[in-house]
Image (spheres, rainbow, N blue to C red):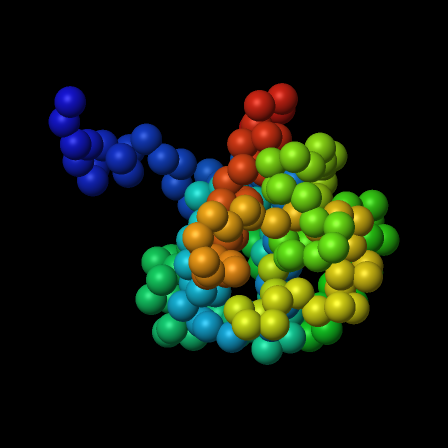
Length: 180
């Protein structure tokens, strides 16, 4: 076994010009009131890796161009389709009007383990503020609530980490039965 070189890895990836002709995984991700620009940048980078359909930034969530986002996004703001919608509730209603199922990643009295939800695509994953979580107004509009089990003493994961777990899991589920 040997570690691949940067050139070998780069040569195995598509270039940004090819990206527009490729199908995307039908996952929309909504970030509502994420306060850390470093979390936003990290989520952009994960969104590039999973080739989601679109990232929707809402409320106080910062949006490009910002050097704090770029620091962790590492150029992925150019490869991930995104838009800013001031009101998260309006963004959710817009997605629901398109027939997209809304999945909040939040601990609620009806949450199930994220691995147990039988989803259909397209879907929207919703992530909320690092302290207060997804707003009650958005939870009331959601079709499903999922949570990531916690086995230690802390109640939740960092939003960018939770985003990575959920987005990769649902992207993998989609790719198991569909080709890109």
